[in-house]
Image (cartoon, rainbow, N blue to C red; front, side, top):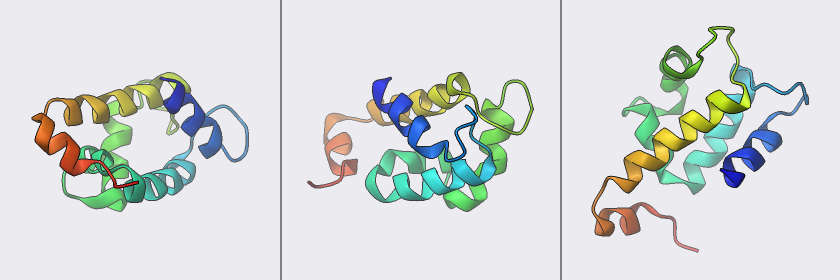
Length: 97
């Protein structure tokens, strides 16, 4: 959860307390390189194709932005998908240091 909060703060470039589509896309592009589990959220569509689906699924108040609660739900979903794989798959999906 602390990691998600830190990511949220870093992504909230204008400091308004929510992530708009542009801020979320920038963050997802950065994260996709470092955290392969982000790909579990894109369903093979890649980050660019996933934004509308992510907003539909996780933007609970349908205001076109993610608050911290909505963002942590997205991150928890990505983590749970990775954690549901066998240990060997989890290791294979983690980036090398």
